[in-house]
Length: 631
Picture (cartoon, rainbow, N blue to C red):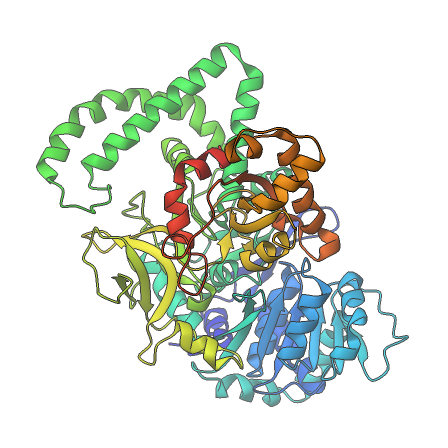
């Protein structure tokens, strides 16, 4: 088997030279194909162009771009030289980009447009290693860049074609010398204090998943994957490697409803990697349209959804598609399910004909399944699409595991789980003392396997904190195994919050900023698997009492004081004044809702001996209140 990602693509290009690897829109919005051999020619030429700029094995090359054709050409071109890319999206702040490029010592960077160039320009004094900037979109202005050379992507590609034609062995030898243990990328994720950590992933980390994903999902030659997620995230990236590694094509779109659905009609994809929020938006759009219709159509729609949902539940019970956290009696399940399964089937079939076939047609008509990751798939969304006969396969993983630790088996998808533990991977559920727990018991998820990272770049202490010498990774997530070795994720021990759109939020900087207010004593950020952030706030009661006295606010007790509209308005103003774009926070990091608590967090309960917040304890203690916040 090929032992690097470029070799994998070369291997397939030789076997199937007619296969399409990319579909990209032209000026008219029509998807145009690129075959594997043409792509090979392009990535080798780009590699030759990079080699001419001094890129060599072991170097780090910055790659600041969204999901597009040139991203994959750049990525595989970098890897062909034995170098590693350092990717980031165009929504990154200038400070983030500066830190990452400086910390990883990038001499060459590839950026999408002049907006990214402006970010680099604002911090060029900190980027002492930087020698070359390659701009994908045209419009290079070389002025004001002393010591740094600017190039267009097209220029590097064209020069590379000439260089490769003259001396192909420079690139070809580098490709052949590549090894499974070579570092392929440094993906920076947020640290516990907001400082990014560079996850070192090898070709072998990715290839283990490329080689084994088809054991769980049936993708291959002739399939088309619609690409809507940021490719610098490991989830979209591994899906692209899986697709191209097995001869499927990538079609580039946007995670915007009208654009995505129009592209689905045109390209008729079979697969799509997505975050839960995309499927929520599709479902919401369907309900919005049907509610506008009203009348008999609305009544029939709701009837068929309810009937199909019930039929799906009985089908799952009949075919053993329920998670077994406790041993189930199969004969009993069959006896309970078989009659309603048969009785509801004609209604389900009629619903497919009258309602659900139209939904499937909106997805292009050839859609096999969506892979949902980057956060938990809401049960209501999962149930709706299952009832509609649209398969969603929920997966789970971390950047540190490149990223897949599990994904639902296409042939045996068990709802309420993220599927069986990934082939070649071992998952243990442990309690806080490190004892291994049996199936059906909730604990911390530990993972070991060929996809686990080498560590954090230049941060050995952080690596040791999460990765043991014998290869066990503490995911920081709470989970439970079924008796069939399927994994269910139950929550998080670690701090990082992942919103439904896949955005990673580090709570500590936001909490610390809120607590700069004289009226806020303690806080805990909320939002795991939600659309937006919220917070539990413990106010400084003495300061609030002074405020109430100064503003003639009467109250009976703490609860009465905190229920005052004036106090809520005060706290909201304090939060919004501090958590905003001017303070360096992104739009998705803003706190949309909050609740005031009458009792402070205390050591031995909500706080550890080190005065650190025990987030999982607070989540359980205030579960109902948190549900109300997001309802």
